[in-house]
Amino acid sequence: MSHEKFHYKTLEELLEKCRELGISLPFAYDTSILATPLEISNIKLQNRLGIAPMEGADSTEDGRPSEYTEARYVREAEGGAGLIWYEAISIVEEGRSSKTQLLITEDNVDSFKRLNERVKEAGIRKNGFEPYLIMQSNHSGRYSNPDNKPAPLIAQRNKWLETFRAADDSCIVSDDYLKYIEEMTGKSALLAKEAGFDAVDIKSCHGYLFQEVASAYERKGEYGGSYENRTRLLKNSIKAAKAYESPSFSVVSRIGIYDGYPAYSRGFGQAEDGAMDLSEPKRLVKELHDELGLTFVDITMGNPYATTHIVRPFDMGKYVPDEHPLIGVARMIQGVKEIKESVPDMAVYASAPTYLRQYSDLYAAGAVAGNYADGFLFGRMAFADPDFPNEIIKEGRINPKRVCLTCGKCGDLIRAHKPTGCVIRYPETFLPFYREFMVEKKDLPENFRG
Image (cartoon, rainbow, N blue to C red; front, side):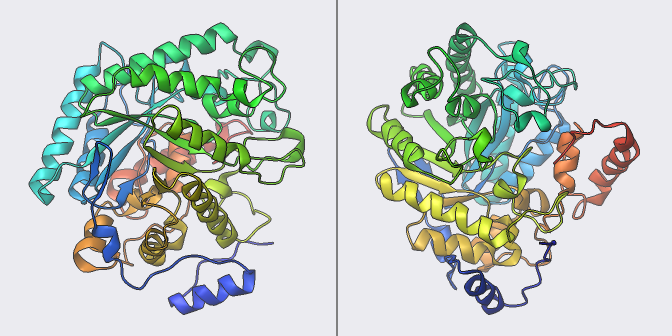
């Protein structure tokens, strides 16, 4: 199929297209439910709208937040979201996605503390409350580029993924290294707490190290093969982080429940024939809740390097998926609903509403009202329109003239290791970086994809 542009002038036209495709999406005509607070355990959120973790590629070389980082998060706090889920922050130097990915260490934790103080002050000043701040701890694994050059650290060989990022046997990490990462994850939780975050996310999604271990079906040793072994890294890391929990600091997780790889390179949440199979993801989330005491998760899917359309449905991407973008939206929300039904007492947030543009608020409201999810994280939309939460809460609807167009240019900037934001809505800041990217593009490796 070819790219089909988003051209729905009314919600009724969009619903008709859904019927044509044989899918169902939840919509509401009233967004007021998104303004309601959420309280579960010691987590208290002012509304059901959150900012998804989107890398800004704008740190200093030693991993500290820069003026671009601060400006972005201050604007998001002013925008009125109840929750800001910070971008991936590396917990070790070798696991950074680039020289411009944030890295938290004992030496720079004070810079994160100052950033969080300013972000919370901005929320109080503009909206009368502090947004709930979550630090996403991360190891990029296969996609590590600490010197802006590929230096993959992988769980096992994967023929299909190696068409996007070359790797060989020397890149496979040892069990001892994974045990070290468990320790460093615990340390990152302590640093997050010292930096003034309200929670730390032990991230397992989007093809990075933790997610790749979850699908290491062929790996030998303590971290591969059986379900128990493949979930060991995540569970042990959560246990290490929970040592630092307190009434004012929580451990949460962003979980990828379906990778969407071909059968011969089977990912997590897939049967042997490659079809989506959520039995293991549902088991995992339930165990995280019942056995480890986790009270909050965000659910996502896909791999932004290899199955971009699954995590970020688009109509202007670099390749044409073999499915309509609305099918991807439906897959995501139905998967989230299955997880929510399996852990009804857990706070479950959904991801990836941005493709629906001016109808994304009605979609989020319909999903929360229908108990598909307890709230929504918006990623690309926050780059384009950081004020979207206040537009929805105060005006009842998102501003259709400021929505994300899913053009993918922010993804280009991230991959090019340049300060990242919306090139369309904020050209004065980000168009110069995009022009640099276009000039340099001829020298990028063939496997550069976003």
